[in-house]
Image (cartoon, rainbow, N blue to C red; front, side, top):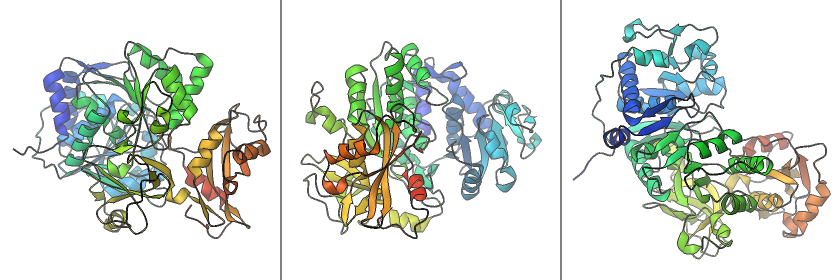
Length: 553
């Protein structure tokens, strides 16, 4: 029997099986059961449909991790629309590009970010504007609660709750197919204009199934939203947490005191945190010693480059949290691997951190390969470097209106696989470890140097709180490593360590050609909303006076 895989099934199941159970704890203090959440979603769907939203229309959501984001996403998808979440750290010009590129018909925006849309409203094709506090949008009158779209003037900001008050929840849900696009997630655009990653009902559903399995999600989980919902639909958690009937605890960002408080008072059992988030929590803990759990044991997922081992040890040995290291990209769902391979480590042995720092093994039904420039698999010697390529049901359909970019992404080294752009090795157990981004490899005197290896080394120095290493121009070597260091004491004028001391520290631990001799102390590193360091900003500044870069950085 074949049943279409549709993302609407997740909320449908929660309402059917867990209707009277608490679903969402809002940032405004309100709490909703799944019945109440579903009713709000239905009323928004009815209101959007009355305002002209049809199957296939793109509806953008610009919102931190509030219940409004969940409601707007599901209401859009119940209409067969295309959920298009926006990164709230972008500029008005970025939003203008995305709204035009995707042909967005409606925007649901948080009061804190609506001004960025208002600044470009006349430049975009969008007709419907809804805000969770329309009165807060400066200089714009809030729309009324009228239920019929004919009474709403284009461009006026309507108030979200007033829109719900004016709707009865009756709407027509169209027939949908699992191969139809249901979300477009825009990449950060670090190498050009942002690209819209198209994902189908099938992509999203199977990815949500996979994270429910690999992240051990169950119905009595309490999930804390520290990961942005806009980021690949919150790594699929808007679906998996909902479908399993678990509880969402919303936030407006990562503020360490609030995170520890929520973990204790809401009995949080699971959350996701980038390495920088774990560092923030670790630093706060060192100073304030808050309670780190409520009544539930806590597990945390981190992604991308592994946190420093000192952070891993603090999280597991002192906090008592169970850490899972996962890996992926916007184009892949995102999650495609996990370090949670317990047959390869002992929970009570510190040697487990050597496994947990690796990106891990492929998810179920996911084929991970590391290939050389000829598309051949590298040997499992944990030394030979190749590019990670992946094939799986969670991988994107393609880039919106960019067939050439889609073709390149699936064919550069190996036909039919998405190319991650990450360079990795594979050990004897088939577990991968990312060594660098292709563009972050430092080519010094003809030798390839992993910036990640240098960062891991410098992280071990007690005066280093955070660090990013990039290629810097060198007349002698073409490129040489340069480290941007956030000092532990926070004082860039008196960082508590001299560059010569850090150079000596790397000399003791690394091959001679890898020694770091250039340092710059900074207050903070440029990061994305998910905590990923934006090295391209550092590279652009460092190479501003050069005609070209020697390597791939």
